[in-house]
Length: 321
Image (cartoon, rainbow, N blue to C red):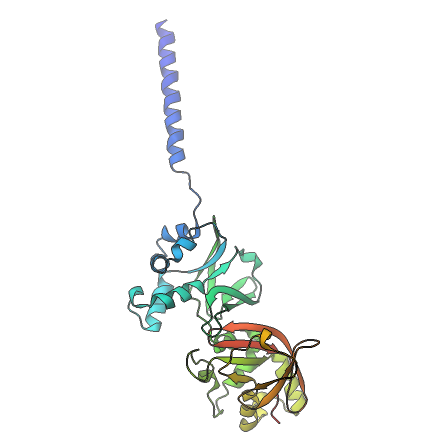
């Protein structure tokens, strides 16, 4: 009897210990986190956590709607503050900080494997149009770059309400020039705009803030192939063979000042007053531009929205009369 009692006691203690062990394990089960929950509990995102709280975006990223967040770490945020001349987050105006953060957010959860090169929309709003800002994503051999400057260094941190991708720099709010630099399909346009002998500083002009004349801009951006075709048409070998007055005049015909003209603003026989002179838009049968030489450029991509204007991509360079 005593022997049986000892065995019963031992069995009871063993079960009790096992039960306690299971309860302890339950205490350490990793609970699912929201996007903000991941950021707030990481030691790498103290700046980002504070910024999201200051702008009340913490509430948005702590909810149930699905988002993708490009998350700059503390080193990236500190570098950004130094570059723009702020000593700390408190010095950054809340409205500006909100737009900076929204420029890191896209609606819906995007897996790393699903990134492709192209233009997409962020949750930020353009100062020129009050419509969503575009973001340029460049994916080459599974290496993803945002607006030509920020690279994803760690992808697919999954949250209950979306996905986080860590980036090594704050994603810049884009100007017209940002996209010209970021888009490898516009390389020849960038070379033309920045040719050293030009008497007009197009890069500086097209970087003008939306609230300052001659911004905002509507820019018709020829593709790289359009410039190759232009060289053939002019019978020259390279861009530097085009004399400065001709190149300068040509570039002015691709820019409308003080206007953010979206594709929905175009119509048939619409005269557009570029910085160089008038051209004509038509939309029947596909959007086109006709210059003073009756040369027709097809608009092949529309409404790439920068903070200081909009870009429409065209397949032929517009020439002055």
